[in-house]
Amino acid sequence: MAEMKRGVTRRSFLGSAFVAGIGTMAFGLSGCGNPRSLEDEAASTEIDGGEFDIVVIGAGGAGMAAAVGATDQGARVCLLEKMPVAGGNTCFAEGGMNACCTKFQAAEGIEDSVDLMVSDTYKGGHEKGNLDLIRHMCENSSDAIDWLDSMGITLSKLGTSGGASVKRIHRPETGEAVGKYIVKGMTEQCRQRGISAICNTKVEELMVDDAGKISGVRATNPNGIPIVYACKAVIVATGGFGANHEMLAQYRPELIDAVTTNQPGTQGDGIVFSQAIGADLVDIGEIQVHPTVEQTTATLLSENIRGDGAVLINANGERFGNELRTRDVVSASEWDQPGKFAWAVFDQSVHDNNLSIEEKFVARGLIQIADDFAALADKMEVPADAMVEAITSYNDNIANGIDDPYGRVKSLNPLVNPPYYAVKVAPGIHHCMGGLRVNAAAEVLDVDGNPIPGLFAAGEVTGGIHGGNRLGGNAVCDINVNGRQAQETACAYVFA
Image (tube, rainbow, N blue to C red; front, side, top):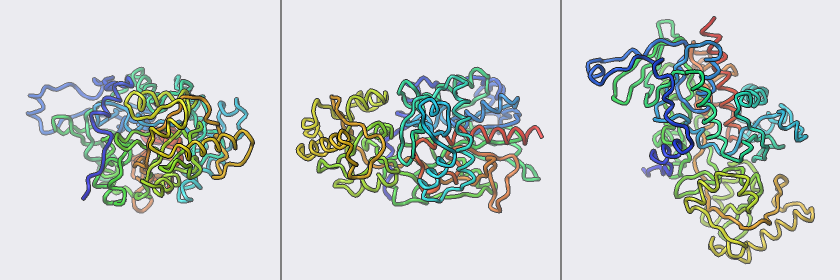
């Protein structure tokens, strides 16, 4: 069987996390049990990790949102992370956070509604999503934006993403990638609260009592020694399985040769150990490919680039479709092109609006740059006449108010400010829409549809919201809305 390409290696993940200033989350360690020497560990078959109200598994965006919220409600929280650093896949989120009816939309006169966001999400997911879960996310999206803003994590810059009827993707005003921005901010919030956090600790098993209620978790430390953390509730926030070769082979074998944008810890652990105590799954074979991934490094080119005006050019120097259709549609269109790739072409204005271009593409030599489109086409090795004609026509149609021949009606920004840029892209594995079956209260359900007492989940480890395709910006919305929801329900359960 072919080996899955992991352009994001463990080393490159750690490097990018430290560059972002995320650090090792070594805050509040004393709250998670007394330090032990290697000799003590060697003499012990199992370490007592302490007793907590809630154990949160996974220190990505959903996990940190849950940990912060639960701590603010007075819960004793332990946050476990199997990787050496915090952040998970959230570190790699580039676009922004979808939310409707926000104060930032109101300030720009953008008319949006819960119903419209629900409709966009449901249609974008091929009408496979759970409408109760979708509506819950959309109804609580504005409040999540305000909650982040109250902590200095402000997403006030609005943009357009594929499948959205209006501008509703919220980004940092600085233009930096939303994921690193949120992770840095949430890490600081955890530090301020003294939240107990342990990295390099992999959960292996959920423990239940004779009544079937969660009673703790069993994990292993870097030395392979088992540690037991007693608790009344667990929030699973471990992410998807987009970097797990075996699970991809099981559920979507046709994607096995695709590169993945997922960090190497994205192994589906939470799905496996939750299934072991009876958790049900939903939409598990629904895996999203993202259309703009640089293939030699699996570096994601943000959807914001297209949302700010970039066009896609094929090997013949031609545009071939509406660049702002949903990710699955654009990916399929790329696979139909000669060589199964495209070039994302944009100008200096788009570049200046997206800081990650310099760090991820220019500094690493993954981009072509020229002062005019003919010279850029030569560097791209596509027919210059055809590409100049394609972009000239695109610009002229915008200037003259002529409808785009491919039906693009959003982000029609002319490419007129040199220098010009091009990144060669093709689809790559990006997001798992399926996972643990949950209800709108973030309770994990068993195969009979009943909540498993004390077990909650949030983020990409869950399924049901995104259906057959996720809209750009909805993952960051999901982790914040449902990370908070999971802790609300967990705290109510613990303190009942």
